Length: 431
Image 1 (tube, rainbow, N blue to C red):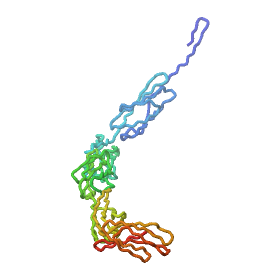
Image 2: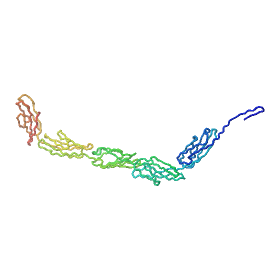
Image 3: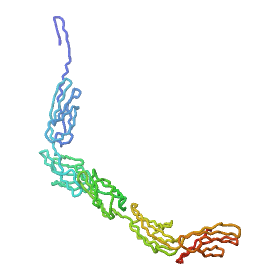
Image 4: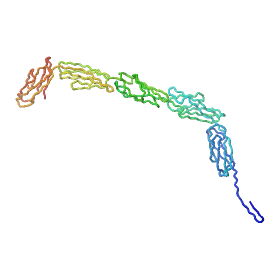
């Protein structure tokens, strides 16, 4: 700008900046398959002149990025992508580019999300749709157990051989070459509980508590026990008492959270018995000792036994023999123990007739001649035969006698008791 008067002039200069950037971009992905990435690149724009870049992809999504943008179109259709630039002076410019998105959309439904293993058959219904231009030409099912079904023929049905959770996938492809895949984790649940149990007390006696240990496999199981004696339980690990002797079949039925069932039956699993002590004797009465008695047991349902002969001696032999050497009445008992600790006892009376008794004497030593007094005792009426062990014997009915030892030496006297029946029982003195 120059200002002039009559004699003078003045000039003022001002620089004016003009920006004239035009929005432009290119893309090699103007025709793509859905779910594919489309790249957009600005063209012919001096980036230093641009304050902002605004991309609008026409599908409800936009981005404020830079001179390039990448976008994934999830739905088939025709879209207009717009780039709006704003320069440093606030001037705007826009440009549009059409994009065609092709491709099918995979979708399916399942007849039953949960099935029991036995006789399971799941139906899969294809609900995939094309882009309206290119028909679907391929359907490939992956049932999650290693089975691939590319038949393309409905109905799509599959049976699973093993319990578990299965991810099911459907891949579809149209005649343009676009594909889509839909995967549903744990889409199919095949459930099958496994009933099982054990008891450590399968052989025992009446009234003994029996614990049943449940080892079944499954989630949130419900239990029904049948003990074979008319009694049941719904406890996981029940304890049961059997009141009667016999053999019992035990059953366990389990049901899981999906209603799937399994059962196990153990025939004659529990044996309830009670030991019975029985035995016979070869002799039970004798007119004179000693008496040899042979014991023969006839016990049943036992695991161990013990004999008590009634004279302070015992035996654990199966069928022992025993000598009774002293007259008297003895009660021989047989005690048997069965599984579970049950005990039974049998008893028999043994009578050995004849005399019995004892004797004492004093003094036991001294100088010769030594007179010793003997005192006998008999439980039954008997005659006394005193054998003084020095060659002298005296038979008398007297229980008290005396004897003088003339010679020096060691002597062991004995008393022989004889009853009216002629039974003689020797009793030895102290050694």
